[in-house]
Length: 314
Image 1 (cartoon, rainbow, N blue to C red):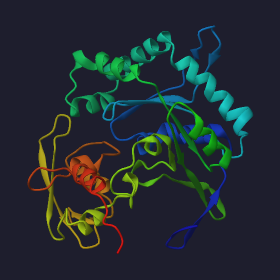
Image 2 (cartoon, rainbow, N blue to C red; image 1 turned 180 degrees about the vertical axis):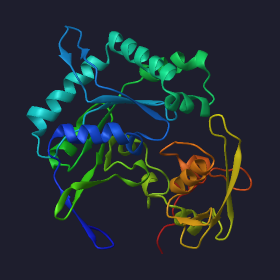
Image 3 (tube, helix red, strand yellow; image 1 turned 60 degrees about the vertical axis):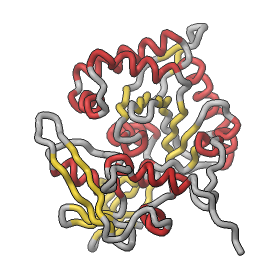
Image 4 (cartoon, rainbow, N blue to C red; image 1 turned 90 degrees about the vertical axis):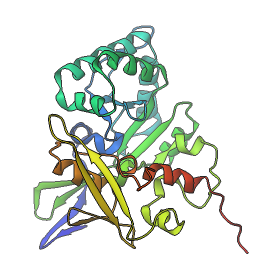
């Protein structure tokens, strides 16, 4: 249950898969990251011409990954519905005609949508290189991205045996008690999947006590990689605006104080900064935005923590 003053929100099921699909379309950055853009439903075909329509495609130009997106409800049959559907989508997505189609749609979005164009610009990708960047990303196999309201055990087992990488995110729906028209949705913190077979398949980091998605600023403080009351810095220049610089103070509990407000996660603190600068961006990766005085990003410090072997217990 969520409580806001006298208002109570209780967890509720999605009315349909279509409702969840639309929530993902409207909020895709909270799953696929701030440097992603979302391609709408489009029919793709296998080599023999069998058509299939994924719920969408997401392309993350920051991490250089692309996703087949299939929003699902946890009560759907894993073997006769989800696995069967996704298998056809994988085969169709690997066709050259599919990749050319996605490249063309992406290039058109870049030309027509300023919000998408800004993401390329912020990463230093010029207009002449847009198609090349997209083409290079599409050369790799897609990640299967499944937003879902609950994860059955069979879905986890299927995902782990699939050759392609799979990420599952839980998205929850809450409705106001006695007012079902008032709805809020819960997304995972910092784009964290509930299951990520890509991370599970990577070689184990020397620091076995913590996973990448679970690292917080307080962990960097405990490892003496950051100091409390120290400072972090971020610069941002919005489209057609002036560059601004921001300073964050690190608190003992790992929160960041920026612009007179305290934030529990670096991405929220960074978002406050870029919106103050005049950006209409909805998300930003605070782990790559905030830097120490000597220019190290929080992401680099996180990697240092993960690659530092843990001391054996006495």
